[in-house]
Image 1: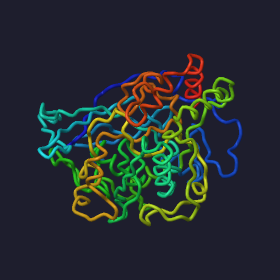
Image 2: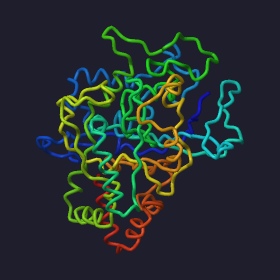
Image 3: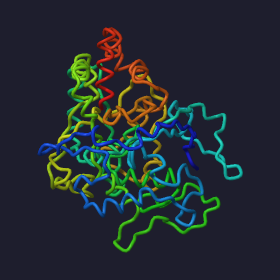
Amino acid sequence: MRKTVMAGLVLSLGAALALFSQNTEAPYPPAQGEAPAAFDGQTNGLADQPTHAADQVKFDEIEQISDGLGPLYNAQSCRECHQNPTSEGGSQTAELRVGHRGANGQFENPSIPINELQERVPDTETIQATRMSVNLFGDGFVEAVADQTLLDIARDQCHSTHGRICGQVLYVPILEAPGKTSVGRFGWKDQHASLLSFAGDAYLNEMGITNKLFPDEITLLCNTVSEPNDTPGADGLEDIDRFARFIRATKAPPRDAALAETPEAREGSRLFDKIGCNTCHVRTMATAPAATVINGGAFTVPDSLGNKQFYPYGDFLLHNVDTGDGIAVAMEEHYGKAATKRTWMKFSYQDLQTAANKVRTAPLWGVRTHSRLMHDGDSLTLTDAIKRHGGEAEEIREKFRRLKPMQKEALLTFLRSL
């Protein structure tokens, strides 16, 4: 049965954020070795522009029942949840996730009853939380980061903070490479390391469309289309192949270049590091060299993604900052029925449980396009979001609290430039 329910929470950002003008982006090409950054709809070089545009058409396409939509679904298009400021961005849409603790004290997913084709959340599901759709811009560069880079960040965090801040690494299944795993980096729980796995998961769990990675329907109720719904086209590619290629070919979120150059933003940038925000919101990362084989052998880093420096302001690791909801990664939902019967290298089901109250550090690139912050969208201002940081981030939150008013405003100005 379906395990997520659309919460239907929408807050308009206004036409001003619908499309960023060129003066909010870097007015010059990226330096050699830097990832291109812009909200201009142009390819980063992984695909040619006509292919990228055609992939966007698929990403934006409204799915119909004849395409395999449903019978239960949260959206009819990828764009519905990833559209601000353009396709691939985040969203002001929130989803409701629910569950309960079993007799062993571990998180368990519910079997959601269906009455007259409507999902109902039983009173027994005492754990309930909202999740915001995540930004996908620049995720091709994130996918191309070597596992060892993320492992080194986690190790260095723990060492430099004397154990106060220790990002958790999850090894998660690569569904297109059965038996293989990699370090998770996508989704609020780091449940995927591969963009193809991520796309297949979303196609089933958000739109109810089965595919080569998720061939089993959530429910057979009112199912009228043969399986899998997502079938190869004349070129042998399925929709999820095009979705993954589209995401891989997007540019990174750009900064507001004019605001970033102001003295106030520069001072805020210095304070960001001084109080320790950069411990988890890591400024800079680099991708693996071109021709590096990743995703269990299923993908080779191309020249357009290889040896590129980018600025995510995130570490893509799991942390407990006292905003966790107790919801663990659901094996069947995110890896499919067949995956639960397979042995995966370096994979630990218990690690999924220990991460139940942790969330991935939100990358701050593009944060100025978000009207609702944190994984649950419950923070409406940057100050509110900072003040909610506890747990591993408590000491840094207190350092922010002790800043002078002008210093706080400088730090917020810096964040508004991201």
